[in-house]
Length: 438
Image (cartoon, rainbow, N blue to C red; front, side):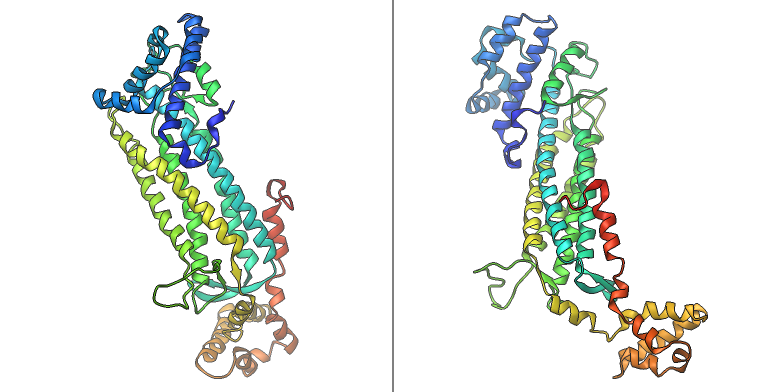
């Protein structure tokens, strides 16, 4: 059973109110479990459920004196419950409450992030199909390589987000564990049946074995997964930034009415959102590193991880949620300049067709090295002189002696480079039966 509080916006998950609501529910469920298995009177459990409440301001005032947040909360909760309040937290330790609450929060935040990821994937699929057959130059090392399509570029992004969705599914499962095992994990003062009762109600599993805390490799895995997803978003954002450069100008972020790009230069359209996404990905990686440092604790528990987690886990979930929303908006409204893509394809005068020409000569019986020398010589001359690549090839008897005019024309045919685009799309989009289903 997923509790009613499982799908608010991410920021609400990390409020004091939501945290205290969870604390209250867990303490009440624990008492109901104790009553279920005969450890406390059932009437007491009913009283606790009926009267359980807290006042945030009162909790904080008590905490100033006790310097212990859980004790302050339990003190205030007992004030509302009355005599039966003595059964609260019986046999538990603070980490039983804190780590189980944190598991609920991380799971719930992960579920919201999963929804945002799926929305981005849907937008990427739509845009990949829209631009499936729009040719553009592919680049390696930033240098023109061979023709691709804009749709294929976006399809690569789609596939990466698809993997991220699967990663997040796994890590939500990993983190969805709680505990009621007591001060050092021995369950000396608790009942495993009560733990199982509480976890079932919360939609969690009981951790098989713990110390005083749930082991932090789980949390590091969660945070590392958020960082990997952030890196995927940064990869997409960086490509859009690169394509928006003035000398490339093939694609750009949406630029809304009234938007300004520079305080000094009115002509500017800067890729501010994709730059922001790229910057925020660095925060996620830094927070993941801090989570890895939290894995090692002294003996059965120290508190060095706690102060770190109070910052990095809420921040990372909210940062990633923001990144997903902004990048989804960018992709949805991205401007694609087909004319500029065509111009850039033709910028090198056909050099991007050197590979099929090399293969053509090899197919005619030339050694690969000899064929490479012929094609490279024509390419280098075309970059340094006025004649085109094709003209230099046509003037080389080593080439024309074995290649016909029709074969030369076919090697320069853009369609031959893109003949398998439909196959690649089918292979990607048919994964798990999603072809044509969004």
